[in-house]
Amino acid sequence: MPADPSGARRKGTLKGAGPRRRRAGAGGGRQGVPLLLLLPALVALAFLLVPLLALLVRAPWQSMPEQLTSPAVWQALRLSLVCATAATAVSLVLGVPLAWLLARTEFPGRGLVRALVTLPLVLPPVVGGVALLMALGRNGVVGQWLDAWFGVSLPFTTAGVVVAETFVAMPFLVISVEGTLRAADRRYEEAAATLGASRFTAFRRVTLPLIMPGVAAGSVLAWARALGEFGATITFAGNFPDRTQTMPLAVYLALQSDPEAAIALSVVLLAVSIAVLAGLRDRWTTTP
View (cartoon, one colour):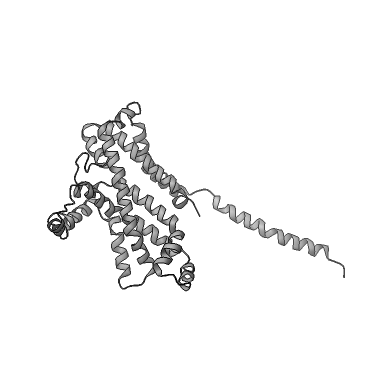
């Protein structure tokens, strides 16, 4: 039976119409942005960027090396790096098991526990410092026993800085690791269990390598949050040079007597924040 060329042309036309329609639909999202949405978006962008640009414009670039090489700045920078790293280490030791508990086990009140874990994220830092004083101060609920039994007093010490920074930074790590654990494939753990591995062995040998990217991202976020902590630190640990005065506290003190030094220190913290965002760009800035 002879082929119908007109039918073939119609089929070809129909076959080719689909991709053209899809391409046309794909380009439909590139239409002009409504003015009522564009203007508020630009205002919001300017609101977030202009203060940072103003900081860079007003920075004393010529005297910056002199400002940053002063002994007080190096003391504050060294203390900030040491305390932020120690707070991140404590957050790892305590926060990863807590994240595993929230992600892998069922127990009554798990939702309440998760809400309490994330509470320091929305709690004013000064309130967190007051709460730490009430708990771990010399006359606090727990601190009085630490002082009586072991002679340990945490407020207004370098260890108190680590405690305050851990309190505000650990939730960032817990949330990041818990999300990674929920997304991880549990079949690998079940396979390890069928081969005789205990739950801890399966966690150490199977789960932990799987979630290492989430642990690394949470650690960086916790470290950056600890480095920039101010309210809880000054309330619980005070502002004593070479003992509890971290970079944010040095910025606050310098702003009252030497604004150029405060701006220089602020630029350093801004550079650290940008470096953290650059390190986490695949996790936070990549569009789906």
